[in-house]
Every structure is written in C-alpha cells, then in structure tokens.
Amino acid sequence: MSGTNTTILVIPGLGDSGENHWQTLWLKEISNTVKVSQDNWDEPSLNHWITRLNETIDELDDKIVLVAHSLAVSLVAHWAERFKNPNVVGALLVAPADVDSPEHTPGVVRSFAPMPLLKFPFPTIVVASDNDSFVSVERAKFFAGNWGSSFVNIGAKGHINSDSNLGNWQEGQQYLAKLLQAIRHP
Image 1: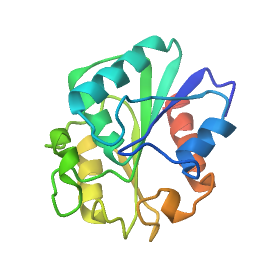
Image 2: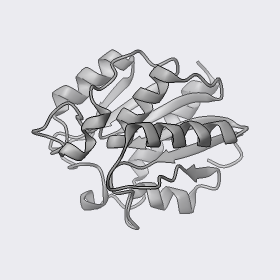
Image 3: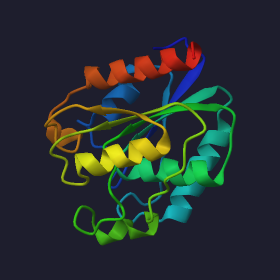
C-alpha cells in the first residue's frame, strides 16, 4: 500500500494497541502508516484526545485515511463534528465502542458520549463483529447508517483486537484497499 501518496493514520482506542494487535502490526508492515499517540491511554479525555488527533492531522501534508479502533471510532466522529481538514479523505472504523452504553463500555469513556451521529464528509467503512462485548452488531449498524458508512459484519471475531487472534488482519487490509480504491475512483 506504500507509494499511494496517502498516509494511513492509525488511531488506537482505550489502553492503546498491544504488540499483537493488528494496528501495531500494520504500523510495522505498511510504510506509509503513522500512529496518533496519546499522553494517557488508560484514562481518556475527549478534549485531550481530540486535540492530539487534530494536531497529528494538521502535521501531515499528504492525503490521510484514518484507521480507528474501538474508542477511537467515537473520537473520529467527534473530530469530524468539530473540525474540517480537506486532507482527510476516508476512514476505516473498526469495532466502534458504544460509549453511550454503560452495559457495553466502562465509565472511564463516558466523556466520549453521546456518540455523534453526523454523516461523515468523506467515505467510511464500519467493520463490526457479531459477538463484540463493547457494542451490539445492531448498534454498530445503526452508527454506520447515520454516518453514511458502508457496513461490514465479519462474523464472530470478538472486539476485533489482539484477543481475536487476527495477526496482521489481512481481511482488514482488504477493506482498507477497497476504501483507498473508492477514494481514488469515486
């Protein structure tokens, strides 16, 4: 995927992405991939996280495709509601954590509620799982519908994280390639 004049901006969720997480593996394998780093991965603050995301986006000169996981999906929705940057041309939104639901997410993420339900100004794909403990598949589909996103249910893959044993998640790279193709040839 290198050589595309597009930067893939990896945005981890609560707790960061561990060594075996597909996001970490993509950072090692895909040359045009960079990561948003937060000061506190375990006690997220929407205001701090959104500021860091916006600063990172502003520092990049290329076209940008956001690759968000879990809590970072709501971060991207909040960013899109507050900021505009023509360099952001798409987003792959994986396993959105339902920040509105105390049943599905811990209280430490409540500053990210309510989940913004705006239509994104760029193409997006939401990828969800049948058995994600952080969001029901119906709720993920509801988010996708409001955001104007394509929706993909990948079956029983848990939270689509390290515990899902996906390795470098080739299937996810195919969704990313499909998104890049859609951006290049709308």
